[in-house]
Image (cartoon, rainbow, N blue to C red; front, side):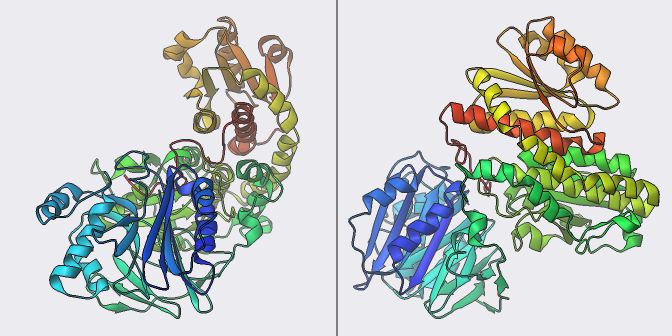
Length: 612
């Protein structure tokens, strides 16, 4: 959740840390802070509640001569949003400063032990316990700082990504991870560390990804990596392919709007090199399954969280329709706790935009412990999920900075479509059916472009409904998950209560909520259940509900019973989620903007959920 940065080198440490934190603010924005170690080996900490801009303002007049430093942007877990709870945290003597992303589960036990030894604490956080524990071991056992860190980490239970500096050993930054991502950036006589490559792309493209229970010690010249037995490890250097333009707003008022409008290009990137139209087939390079193993799959379990879970539901419909393989969709947060029944020819498919979602990662590990293969769908090359899966598919959506996911969702769906066709062609799907589907799939990016051209019309609809207290989203078949996703987007960024339901389920409870103040969004595009949806629209209208309909054409029935209509291009029912979700993204976006809300950083949310 939280974001960590660190820098050692000849550059302007304060400004590099602040700029890097700014690019990580989507990971948490309750408070921010930096610790600077100057040429006299004294550490100063500066921290402030609220956005990084508040911290930057406080530091405007600080003329630092720092040679290295660490920084943190916080998503609060233990302790409220206060300056005292903001990171970095000091030890008793102000000689060690530490930042932390994760949760120390046994912090109470450790705190009681440390208090008996005379340690005093200034915050409510679990993190402060860790820096005092390192101090206690360092002073008591008279060992090196990195050995002290290792001994401390072997005593804690939970997750962590940490970076620390110390006046005791003032020419190094020590970092470690377990369940929370960390990446080391290698420059010319300067080194960086961050929770996400976004933070360090302006400075270097050469990176090393830390694995769980690894520690790295960095100085200006190089870095050395160890396991928690203090055994040295040789790590490969990876090259980041994203450029600066990909992580800038590029003229758009927000990242979220930019990412909504990037969807046609993102879809093309996801399909590029994979759609083989002459053969009516899909090519994947990284599944790491033989055709025989693939044909033997008896069941697919898909696990994910949030928006990715909605994409998984679409995937269930797709795979069962095209490949005739039974599919089960689980919340990742529930999967490993219910002792799922795993059979010999099952595979687990995990979906995560960041590739760092802790619940999804733990579901992956549980499945591997039970002996089945795990495939991943993720957007971030080098992410933990990408590295730990047996194989998988990258989304190629490009960096997604807005906390509320948009282009990652549509790319997840398009990847699920391609995977379903790939599986279908290996089993029973004919060449002609494969070619028919892929011909239409190639048209989807342009159809999404047509929807985006209606942004001003959707903005006008949003203006009408900005004061609503509740929304209902209804869809059937492939568009039930789209209703869920539309409701989630509205909740995430406008703070309006919204629920998504299968349209037929409305009569089994939600219909009690409908009155003249309740906007109801219907996904009423062409499909086998179209007439059923029209009947549901009439039922809502009979109770004076205000109806917004997403349709392919404006019929007399729709004119009579709807208040507002968005007409979208027609496509195959199986592909309709890709087109139909876009007006729902724009509706949520413009309602939130009408309410003057920060859509890129909605309250209480963070982009990558790396804690339970």
